[in-house]
Image (cartoon, rainbow, N blue to C red; front, side):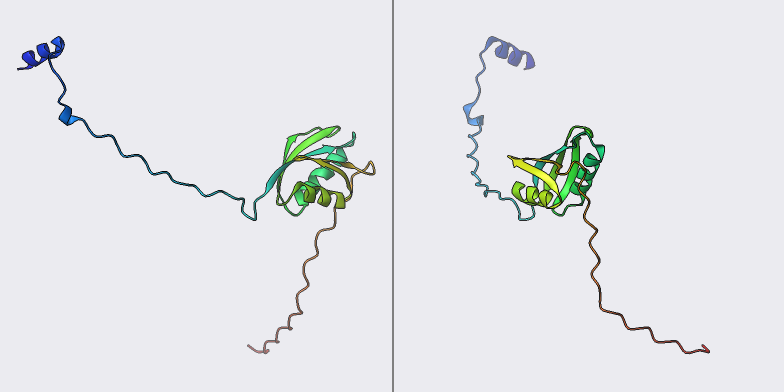
Length: 151
């Protein structure tokens, strides 16, 4: 039987039974995805250019300001040139104008365009870091009651 089938197959005498054909699959339903919006706490990525003017302390203070500013979730150096222009990628919870205003409020000379903020020392020396926040004063606690002597 195998020899008969093999010979008929080789000679092209066999034909496929069309009743064994599977029907075409139905079309897939089209899913409409909702438009994604940024959550309220999303951050934006900006490039900061620190122009140190040849003073390594300006770069160091610039990085210190970026790492201690509110709203900045990360400050990652991309190109470090302490005596020239250094590039830092920051994630900031706000707009570029808000970031530029915050840096200007800390004593930097700031210019912003697109997603790039350029900072340099306005006085030729690094702006001072702001003092750390003072902890909130809590209400005075009552003095503990003295324990009885003789226990």
